[in-house]
Amino acid sequence: MTRSDEPSEELTAIESEALARVQRLGSGQATRRDIEETRHWGSHSSAHSQALAQASLLWDQLGPAGANLLKRRGDSMLADVRRQPRMTRRAMLGGALATSAAAYLVVSPPMQLWPSLQDVMADYRTAAGEQRKLTIDGGVKVTLNTGTSVNVHSGDNSQDRIEILTGEAVIAAASASREVRVVAGDGEMSARQAQFNVRHEPRSTCVTCLDGEVRVTRHSSVAALHAGQQVSYAALGLAAPMSVDPAEVTAWCDGMLIFHDAPLGNVVTEINRYRSGKVMVTNAELERRLVNGRFRIDNVDGILTMFQQIFGAKARHLPGGIVLLS
Image (cartoon, rainbow, N blue to C red; front, side, top):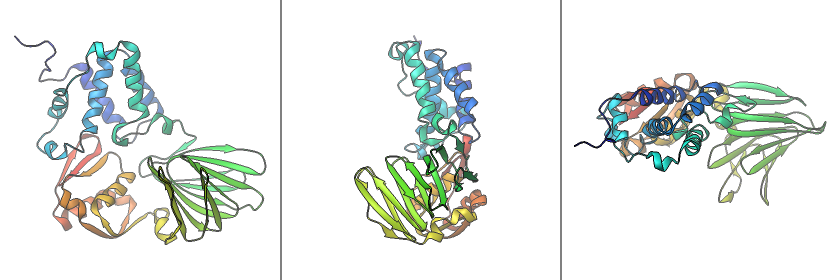
């Protein structure tokens, strides 16, 4: 006898649709409506939520299983995920937990393959590879880099407040009488007549003063930055300021990426910010190879081709913009 819960070789209609929805969200072109519709679709039943979770798990497992995935293709990849322990209907505890599971996938996308609901609902957002210039009340100019989401709160006549949810931006405050405050994670920057770059990622935030003076505060720690100084903060606290080349930090404003003796793994992490999907290095030795050079942001796929030529790397292209380098 065969068990009734043994996965079949072919995808069910629900599983096929779940995979299609995840691929859409991972394309980098997902809209607020796409995310909301996926959340609603996943809440129809435990089967819908389970299929959505398994399709997302496929992308989430690409990192640790990258080498094995080189031997697979197409629907067989999803079939492999289906052979993992499945969530039972009893474990799903009915529709309430099914709804929360689907909601989690749109709030915390696996591997950040698509924008979270928070990002999509931001006042301003840029997609992968997109940049945008804003001018807010008080004459503050903001340049958003790729994959950046911000909220803007105009206060009284003496202050503007910008919240960086994720990504990178250059903020230029020109008024001596009007202060601009920028919040990123659990830190805050304040400045008048200054220009500074803020890069906010899930685990750390980096602030670089380009001109004037910027005050960086995290809890009870404070750092006053002058032009050419940079400071970072994370869970461990506020680091000591260091000197950097502002031109390299803001090379993205000129459409360039600059690397000096950077491991290929770090370079690929940076490239991933400017393209849809995700590039992963599945060869540890290749990941450690050093990269030097200046590269154009609008040709990141050309950079990958160059790595294949220089390092002899092989590229495997998968749905959803996934590329495995080995």
